[in-house]
Length: 373
Image 1 (cartoon, rainbow, N blue to C red):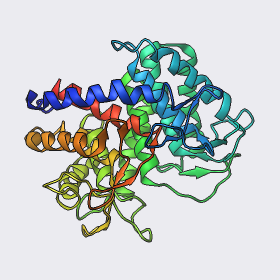
Image 2 (image 1 turned 90 degrees about the horizontal axis):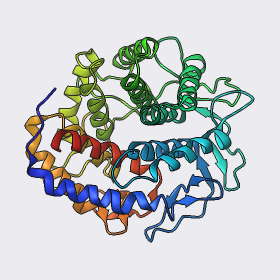
Image 3 (image 1 turned 90 degrees about the vertical axis):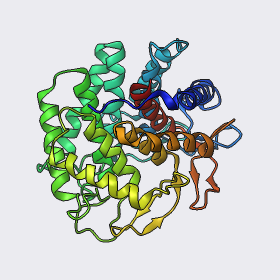
Image 4 (image 1 turned 45 degrees about the horizontal axis):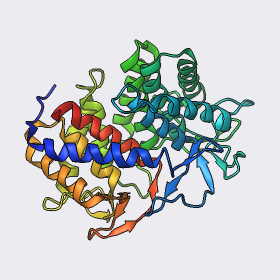
């Protein structure tokens, strides 16, 4: 593994960690928590008040399950285990499809099933969250949910070539969605989380097959970048944030490091950094055409966090890492929470704070702690 950068960034790291533990996490214990449904609201406004609920997503529940599971055992986080247990119960109570198996996409504001389709993105996050949660508590119920999610992905979503359908009907009939990059990346993340807590030859084989298929179907040969749709799809593009996210997963995995996909994303990191990151402000652009032209200059906090996390695995980038840590702190974090999006010029363009974002911050900060702490 690369050597850790020096501790020059420690004051900034301490500041963002304090912001996270003292401000962001409590938002989802208090104003962000619907005690009646035992679910996080989808988003808070800039004044920390819940936006009027129109839906609750299983994916958001799973991301919050990961958030609180990650805090179990940490100093001052005695609340984490009870909240994680409540979120797992809610996941099963509100979203699990007792008739057809798997989990619904969403319920309405009153807790009734809303979008009953089954999507890979949701199931990938259930795998990811339950693997982390089980690592902390080792309760059979948690592992049984993990196993059920892994089984349904293998049995229902798999297309037989290492890839998986993005969306299926409630009864698992085809919607002809085909595979899409983002859910597949998070499935890889879920597989890696599972392998981190137990030996699992079936999951490891599925992960390697997925990496091989992604290399074949999604990687541009010229730049190594991971496209959002399969090669040859109409109106395709790539996102710098996803290159950085994939790079971190591949570089940090003993199973995936050294694969052709790892080599591709190492090249993609450099191309995405060159074309999609402003060297002065540290701004990460949202969407790029294959030639590097910016299609969407929106700066999203998740992409900033993924770039920062990826830099921890590139020891030659210490100065850039320090710049990016300060950029996150100065441009995105504030006294009431965070800015979800800035426009291409750096002005705030989205003021709500989604319940899904703390997952990105938590994984980023854990990467920083591991390599800077």
